[in-house]
Image (cartoon, rainbow, N blue to C red; front, side, top):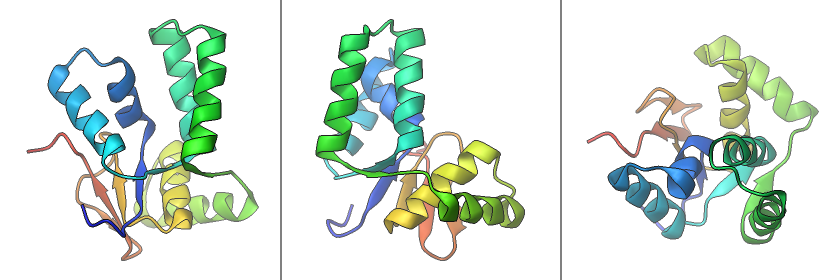
Length: 138
């Protein structure tokens, strides 16, 4: 990973880092987060929190602390009109789902060159800027 590049990490990778039982995936996810300064979006924070509440039964105090940590430690891209319009165009151009298009739009807005996600098309280059990579593919 070049040090100057900006990376965006999708919620599924964060969830592997927090609660996954698969040791190999957990280690890969934790390494990505630890060895980069990822950018995230408000949507990703929402997805992480709802899944930690549902799946891992995180108490609200822990969720609040996690939210504070995300905003203190990482650049967070917030939802706004221009981002929604870019996401709409991405759905037309790349056939992303609604939610994936918001993730990709946020990653593009951050200037990221890499989007780590297990759920999107591995190897796809979006707008000649953003490469989607599944970190678990060998």
